[in-house]
Image (cartoon, rainbow, N blue to C red; front, side, top):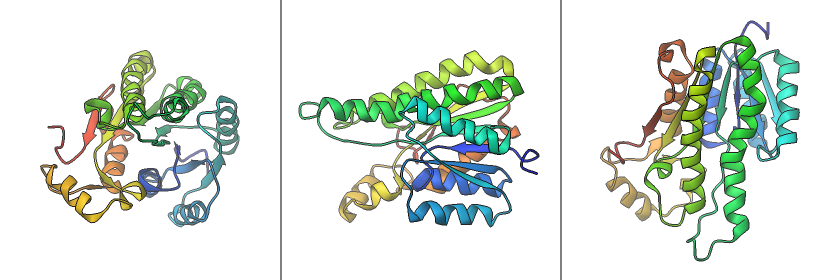
Length: 247
């Protein structure tokens, strides 16, 4: 049964956008492989929610910035399901600070998780897609990877790097029927934005043409489209989910 259903691997999947993507793809009938770095109650809750949708769920522990750990959990997924049809590189961190005050390790750790992590996971998954002559990869970038943002040189650099990575890989693997695209969310309501004061949220909303923050489901719906057959002629693209912010 597990080999009949397509399999989607989502990194950094226990909360926010990653969590919503996992649930949305489970609703579409994908068996789900959840990557996480630290076990928590949210992970167990998510696993149950996914399995209630009639699909299998495998949770795999591993730090995406560690190549050996990624190699191990990808093999674990293949051992369980025999395939990986969809990869969503979502794992990411922020350590915001003006460059003048930013520590070297804070720059490196953000780039290591966000950009090097995207390389590590894709490198370990792509050979299985190449053999199958089929696959969908969606990399979660950010609007700040396009526009930049004060206090986020590390995050912006990592997310801009993901865009270049996406376009280059799309050209490399197109002949094998593997589509690679990037999604660039704007301000999305997640655990990260929950800590902001209400007046700051209101100011942010005013700067967005649609006058509101987005929801994780807005990003998940685009990912659902990009991994479906409906998007078979779309590759190497960066699509903003930002309410018109960078329009």
